[in-house]
Length: 363
Image (cartoon, rainbow, N blue to C red; front, side, top):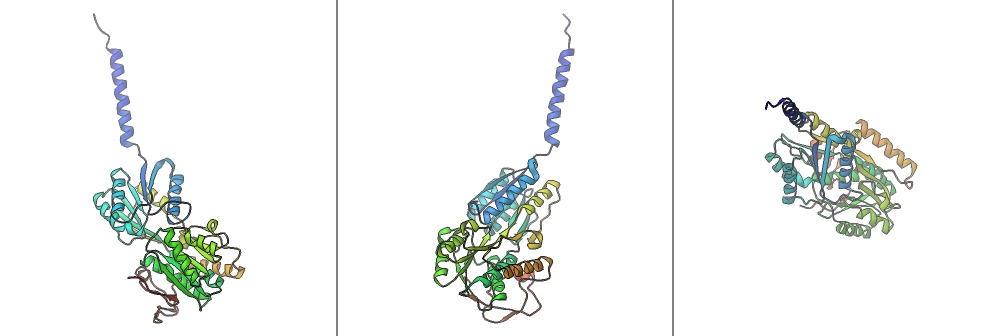
């Protein structure tokens, strides 16, 4: 009996077309860019990590189905960070943001093992072919908040809760002091180091100790809201950091230096998607929209608010630099002559206090 092969032939050809079409779609279609974020503290609803996570959410909003993101929070600096970063790279994350200073060397180690993965490290200073760095000019916001603190203090004693004695933190302390002294030459800044980015207990203890020493305006370079909450409870003023923390100190907070990462994260992700990313060291400030002040409390007089706005505009347009002389070191030695200002290189290696700060930098 003669068989009719036509139907079978048609079915075979149709199946092959389907398979080839499916393979072509996988081969030539664009998969989502998988982006990983490594955080040193819990996200919470305010602070350093919270601001970075707002940046992550902005990437998802801005790039939609072109990307997928994942975050891992509360990752200790050191060996654990290296493991987490490596696991993300092994899992196919082609863009990884590591968001703490102590992640620098772990990021570089993993980057050598995954040369086709792109890494961006926040606040670091070491680059590689597939590793870029980025940070904000935090000191610009610090100077502005120093003006407010210098005007609002009655005791002329300002307090600063600090994490680790690295240039980034020391710069902030010095800028805050210079801003305060620009409007009140009599101020003194007292610093307590807690040797942790996020430890609410230690931050509270340090804040209480500063207030017991006569401080009536307190600020911090740590991640939790504990200093602002302590100021609220003790009836003194506070300057928040990283985020607007006014809900934790509605009567205490005068303003806050905040960091905005969304535009930068979106820009980097687009560059990776387009194949245009290159390793660079980015240092953005007020003019770049990476540093902003939280709303200023109505308790701050109008003339002080106006001075802050004027100074902010001058920083943004480049007509004023917060580290403009004359500036003296803590021991009184002239550091910067009048009319001159420190260079970025000077700022990046800062390891001393300026005049007006009490105490010494831990070794």
